[in-house]
Image (cartoon, rainbow, N blue to C red; front, side, top):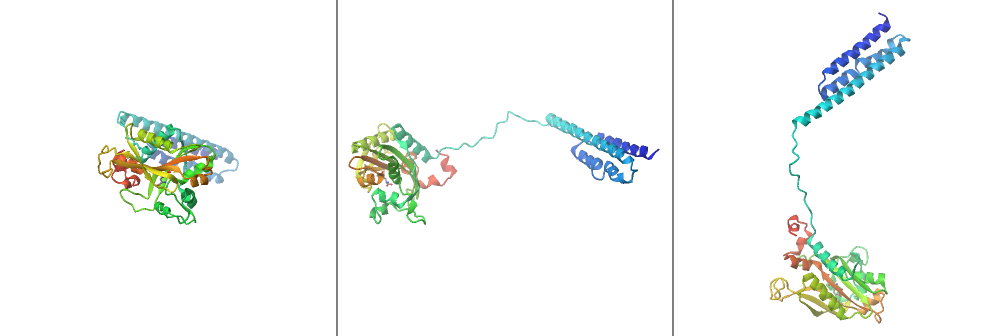
Length: 347
Ligand code: DAH
């Protein structure tokens, strides 16, 4: 045998032996072992490549080509075998494993609206039906908007009723009511007439209790125009109360005082728990207070950019938390912001 014949025979042996072993491989693990043994760095084919230096110079190109062919054949055989094994494994799974597609799925936990959101949306819709626009105004306000422009100049004692949290920036605070929004809407719209509500969060520096929180939700109502009178105030707010509490809800206005309105009033609605007879919810009075209101004070109109000689208007502010407490007979206002799922699930 010539050196060439011997080398080729050697290669042929490597090829046929490797293929013979591959035929007996039955699983993924065996396949990997075979790959390492027959195509890995220390495998016989790779040995042929590294031993090339010892061969006769003329033989090298021929042997290189032949060895490459063997390696390629083995790689193709490996890929083929791998596919064969995978198909067999899948087939096996399909015939032996059972999948019951009729089993019920896992239930999805459905969220729900927070009770405050529900009431707020009802209030918004009622005013929307009456032609009011909804405005947003900032929760972080300036001292001027929260107090001065609402007719409470610095050091005015009325400011004590709206004590709040102050930021480190001079004159910047958390708003204690939605009323500052009145000024913002007026400044945006003057001298056009206004019919707007402003819902949103408000903050107060208060002792936490079952009836008061440091954060709560208010809705501000503002109407500005020529010849707006107290009759419009009463008509609009009565209408609102009946739409919210039912066609036969009774209302009454009590004289009150706010620096930003003149005259001022508070509106009560007949207690819907006892029907007006007196119970713990209405503190035996038969009435529940729902909002403060009044004719916009001339000073406020001026700060808003309206001439009080020409324009007039009314405003109201209501707390959503209290009405929600009453509506759902919730005994503690602090439940609203505890995020206890057991509480929230009930609505
Ligand atoms: N801002 C008042 C408060 O939080 C409520 C209020 C009263 C708003 C009378 C008004 C109003 O617009 O006219 O106590």
